[in-house]
Amino acid sequence: MTRWSAAPEAKHNRDRMDDEQVLTFLRAGLRQDPRAGWTVLLRALRGDGRACEQRRLRELHGQAREELASAGRALDND
View 1 (tube, helix red, strand yellow):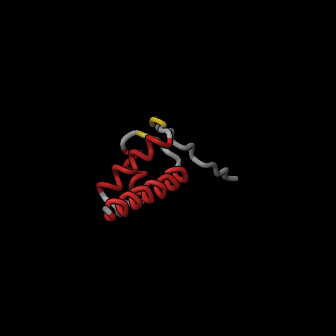
View 2 (view 1 turned 90 degrees about the horizontal axis):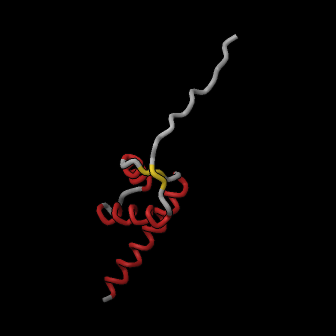
View 3 (view 1 turned 180 degrees about the vertical axis):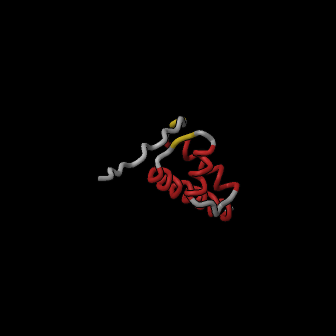
């Protein structure tokens, strides 16, 4: 009988970030490329040795995108 088992997940040594740090990272990324999706920015964040859970980053990405859109509309009205 063959026993199948999942390979142990590799642990990454990444620095955790609070919401404001993640938002700062996302705002900078979206200013550089306004069309950048959350997956691209998550890969960049993790590539820099930082950590954020996918769902949390996706939610904060939406928040950062809304903030920047609101700021853009406010600037257009001046």
